[in-house]
Image 1 (cartoon, rainbow, N blue to C red):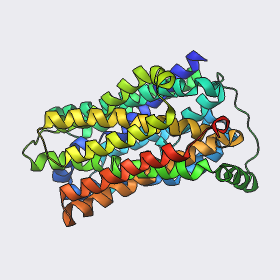
Image 2 (tube, rainbow, N blue to C red):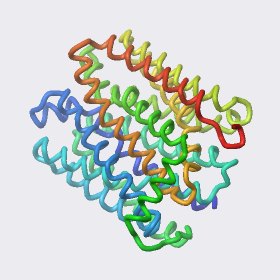
Image 3 (cartoon, helix red, strand yellow):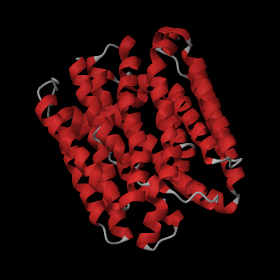
Length: 386
């Protein structure tokens, strides 16, 4: 089991690299492809919308045809999309390449989460998921920091070349070590069965809380990320590498969480963890509105990473138990709502920043995240706690 989870973690690492690679290089892309930075920031939406919308399909296919088989296909497409992004000659072509990458990335972390749910008993699952999150956070850290550094040295196109190379390594690891290691139960795909799975998921009253909460997280926290490089640029910090370091602070905070998650599970009540996570994310957004030096904003992003998983980690455990017979579908629906939020967030902040200003936009987001944590703390309970 440990070996299988380690291979899944490596695959998740490769997939996570794709999520944040363009955020630090938005100003470079905007200049090179002749669009304004706010428009270039919509590359995040182009990645997130297909990721979200394809989740129900990918989850159903994974439950029917096999989770590992779906992973292999998605990694292969992800590599091709990275190559397409590298050679894109105009903004539309890059937008399409990011959209295809978003579709493919949808078959990596959510299916990895479902594999962990299949292998690990529920009492041990939050720790196992924490280890997978560590791989994802490491991918986010390197995706943000390395993309900025690489772009400063050799241009933004090299970022996609490196991503394609790492994705190829993950593909080979999956083909040679993961295939056959997981016993998938496969069957015939029928729409009636998938509708029944959806009914089973949404029959659980926790579903609306889990999916609603992650949508709000994606909107009000992650929606800010594509705009950070432009905000730093406006403040006089034009280096893509610095924008990458600031955004990578989120991954550092996430890694800190993975190191202490076993202690948190033992000593902090779940409801307190969820409320504290929402409150600290809200505090972080309020501090960002002050527009402090980048070193301070890096520390705030570390806080974001830790606080996010205080709330998000317990939610993920609830998701794996919404409907055990349709765990792949449940994990995919979770990711769908999360990435729909990430798709809506950059658009919401784009208009918020221009209409009501930076401070007001960030304070609205702060209030929404505090209320999200409170909502989860008051409503989510395991059956034995009711």
